[in-house]
Image (tube, rainbow, N blue to C red; front, side, top):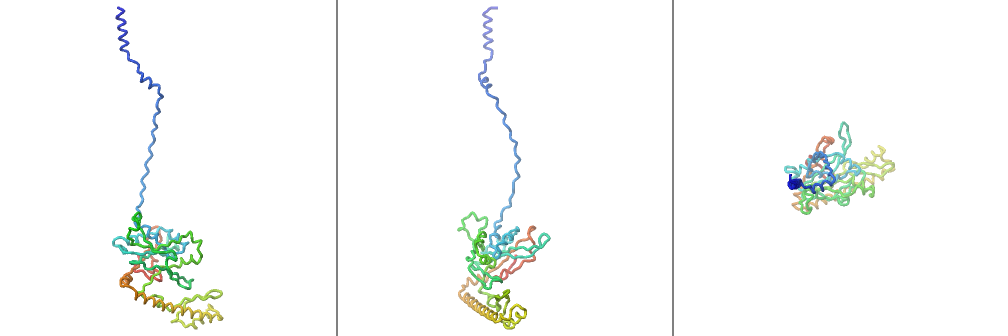
Length: 344
């Protein structure tokens, strides 16, 4: 074999041999990559569903319950009272739909059955006055303990008629809204009561929304009775004297006989009663004169509006978690408003 042939073959073999892969060698010097950890997917929580708020849902709670003791307010709101009947009254076909309405609240303490026992509760009620103007801007303050009745401006007790804004309108500019619902509101803060005198606090408990209808003869004009609270020892004398039906001397003799009045106090008591009768007769005359003057100055438009005034009294709707109040509903509102035209 020739040497040249052998060399030639060796050269061919070298040419056929694969060249070293420098790129692969460089890669092999890198540390091995770590495998990524796969996170376990958390189960998606079930969606929560909330019942949509009704447009007037908080209406009854925004209305101040006039005459309710401050320390009883929490008990009033302790039950989940439902006033959907009041809300529905503003819907199409309801008694308050499309009308200007003034609302005030009150509470009525009643003994009612609940969960197999009778309990004393303060039942909330809402009175709706359908009127083109506020029925009154005054408050009456009267109780058995208070000898004199006061009729004062609402603002003295930090009360006033304010527009109620339905939930769907609370994002709107208030000055652009056309208000049809007005509520009696009170800005007296409960936290500030500790700075008030006891008599001032008690006044709130004796407040009654005042109303005077000059087209009707007032109860005061017809009354011939006077409330007597005579200061005496060991206890005051509480009684009523009717100057048309009672004869004063006989009235006094009966009190002495019943040992309500002592013999040595009878002259002072007689003068006390006579003075109260004079005051009451004067008040009656002034009330008649005020009514006559109001009628003379009243416009025909105002007269028609007063003639068309309507009072509606709303009680809570019966629900499984509230007491049954069906047997204690009453049309009477207060001594100024009298009775409601309709109870709902």
